[in-house]
Length: 415
Ligand SMILES: Cc1ncc(COP(=O)(O)O)c(C=O)c1O
Image 1 (cartoon, rainbow, N blue to C red):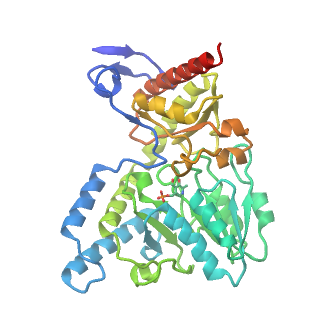
Image 2 (image 1 turned 90 degrees about the horizontal axis):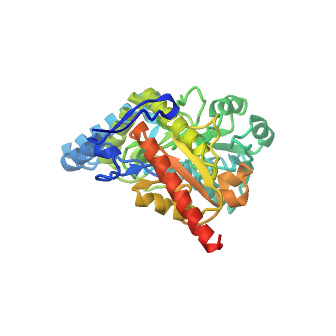
Image 3 (image 1 turned 180 degrees about the horizontal axis):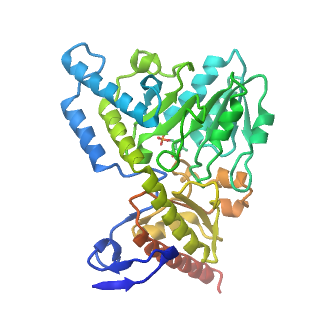
């Protein structure tokens, strides 16, 4: 039986059938997960690969016997496969435990390696804490950090970067896709500029960009680039730091020859095999996924912009297809998140790392958003597994939650 028909979000017509319980919220509720910037659901194939390797190829890749040799072979195949997918060389792939480690390693490893050349680092005012806090720690060792401002769209200017470069600058670290609002930085143009400064190491945090944007590491002239497996349907605790051949950075974890002596510790072979699979599945479908995510984002944004209490912060241009950040005038975002959760719709207040500290969004403040709005922002982050048919359900739930909260506030104020 058809329960709704002809709802045409942004020119996409679909029919809402009640045989598909997924879209009929009154019957057997099924969750709508919209917190994919925090983490994604691993692909079934990825989990299968992990289990298979963990069970059957449990050897230590450094062991000399055959069981170790099998694990070593799988590790090396995964490295080559990932290098192939990223169009770089296998020896440029360093396995890590994820985005935070990759960023810390890139920043501190560069600082320790090149401190005799200079102690100045440039980054932006809208980085993930794994970059900004790593930089802050370095100030205790005498490093100086310049945080580039952003405009109202959250974008840094090439001129401000150019003006910030000094004789003693050793590193420029730029977030590709901002995790809170989704702004994309002009990392290719920055790479071109930095070609004129061969002594400056260029690092890009590509954690939110993988699969949602196109980035050619060589063309963008990157020296270092961080990715994290669990942000593209891989497993938590897996990641890659790309280190361009010829770039040297000091290891942060010492005590073994693993990872070409750049990162000691017995390798998570099963996790890295799973990472290679997740990356292949992500990149094979990238174009299709970007198109689908862009349609979803457009639909949701258009519908949200019709709600008077909603203020959208994600810029229309220069933003990734999977993130929508907005505030609801005067409403507490935590309460709003829990109201949506009652409908099994899962969103987040800001980035997952800072969602519990109740501070205004650093990114929104840097974009010039007033404190009260920067303190009440909600992030929807999509995955290719979300569907257009979910849009009316999401919008309806948001409208209901706003009405409910406004009524409560009205009652409290005696209105
Ligand atoms: C832009 C960005 N960089 C780094 C990280 C840290 O990644 P991980 O959770 O893998 O440590 C995140 C996580 O949200 C992120 O969004």
